[in-house]
Amino acid sequence: MENLQGKDELYCREVDLLIIWGNLKPIIVRYKYWLLVTPVFFVLLGLILSKAVAPQWEASAILQIGRFSDNIVESREIIISRLGTKGFKNSILTECGITLQTREANLYQKSLKARHGKDGSILNLKIRGFSKESTLRLISATVKKIQDSHLAMVAPRISMLKQQIANAEKMANNINNTVIGKSRQIPAESDSLVGIAVAYFITELGNRSLSSRDQLNLMETYPTSLIGISIEDEPVYPNKFRWMILAGLLGLFLGIAIPLILNSIRTSNRSN
Image (tube, rainbow, N blue to C red; front, side, top):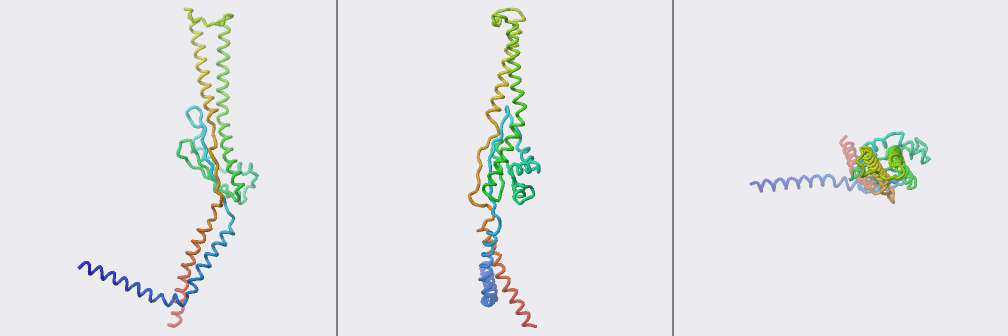
């Protein structure tokens, strides 16, 4: 019983499709030129428009954020927030000699994107420009601006560490010269409290100096660095193939819709 029901439904569907095709066939034959010409026209129109639009190149850069001691110089969230400010973008445009409020300036301001990398200290940058050369210039200037700002952030800390090292060494030398005198030998075998205190104090100064040197070496070894810059060989926008496909689909839709509308008007006029 269920098999018979299923066969009846399938038969009804086939009949419905045959009826629809029977109704559409004379319309398609009568207005076949619309169906054939309209998609082709729109494909050509899409190609022409894609050539008329100014091409855009996209460049990307990968940054390794520098470290100071055990911490990164600046968190990625703060960097991304700073990149989104108007002041940062305008400073890059000014450095590259691009006039503000122009098409190229507006494209840079809209297209500058920063995203988290897989590693906790990796930052990915992307921008667009109207030429390959200007896009490379903008992405390079953006990277350099970030690097310079990080150097400015750590410069006072580096200066302070260097000063701490110099002060510790100077103090140790002064104590050594004052207490030890001409012999310049620490009284390690002496039981005097002064000698023990002096030896301990000089050792502490030496440890502080070594700790400051370790931090300084770490900072100077791991600055914010550029891993690489890449740019597409061809413009990423407009995508000519995509424009032609979309235009062709629109043309196909209109190539079917227009004959149906014309046939409806023709039938209405006949009935009147």
